[in-house]
Length: 207
Image 1 (cartoon, rainbow, N blue to C red):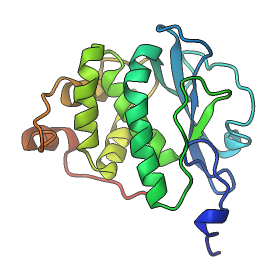
Image 2: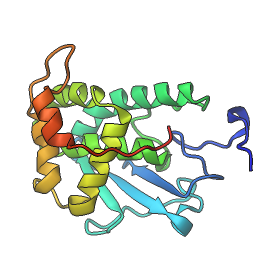
Image 3: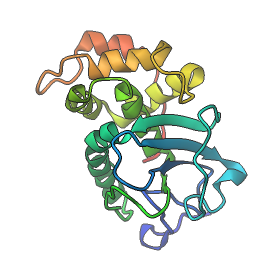
């Protein structure tokens, strides 16, 4: 069946296509401005996608297997606007409407699965890092191709993908490579670090 023109495709949140999606993420941002309030990112599939983002959802429990990220508002606000800019650039290139970043959206924000994976990689890299390291992590993350970010997500979620599995395995490696690794202007990650982090495999996904 032919895909509908981009202009007629229903889009919610940040690139989420409710009539087409089999997979997606949800960003739950608590009300208010408390710096220690926790933003949650969950991953959803199948029937769990029904009305994703359109319904009121209770915050997930810390050990919910669908919960990928718990990150405090201070770190979230340091990384989210730059991520939103990158996501909107990609959405625009794919003929999809962009979404303005909001500090306090009225309801959870559904997000395209490819973008959700990339956001998780960025959040995992800085979830325990000093806030001063976040600009460095953003530059290193931006230097990665989307396919590399997807691959990193796949490797990480296979072993340490639940929100509370911080500081071990691939989560620890992401922080070392993105947040702790110095950014060299015009180069991004050093070739040696890139080889060590990425190995030789990649995935091919849309958007």
